[in-house]
Length: 210
Ligand code: AMP
Image (tube, rainbow, N blue to C red; front, top):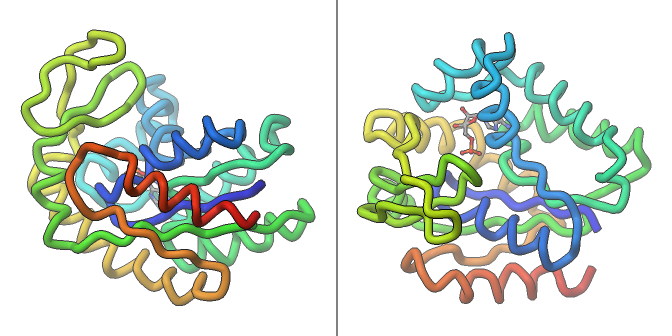
């Protein structure tokens, strides 16, 4: 099963994609995680991406398309995948359609997480991230409940970067709603940080028919 989960920053894409990954036993392909791995490893790609990410901008399309082309060629994605964070622009979506065509694949479901923009700023600005597994927690949480690591604030969760991320999302990513209107299911990611179960039940239902 090939799934795409998308929505504004802070809508819960990572959380829901992780649950879909566990539920369907398919890899979770998150371009943000791939980029953060490159930054942590200090690769040329990481060095190029780091300032763009810290400022809340988008890494250029040709780089992102190359990353996804490589990732889809890895063996584990043959059984399907849940994609999170890509595509983020119309050119990325068009390139992805071409890649999927070449591989004889298509999305079974595209799930859009619908969250009011006003709800995103307080969610993102101040959220805490586990440096080990990248899971995010509400503002004020000190330690990761799973591995005890001291939580950090992502550079791009600082207020100026959050503002920029939302602006870029509205300009470049929101148009994907029309692009995917046909196969797209909408589910609400609105509400509190916890429980995750309400949005999860909806995401799961959105994929049931696959
Ligand atoms: P995320 O973890 O998905 O919020 O991604 C973190 C950051 O990585 C984004 O704010 C962008 O700077 C960059 N990024 C991730 N995916 C993409 C993409 N598909 N296109 C451009 N930039 C991306």
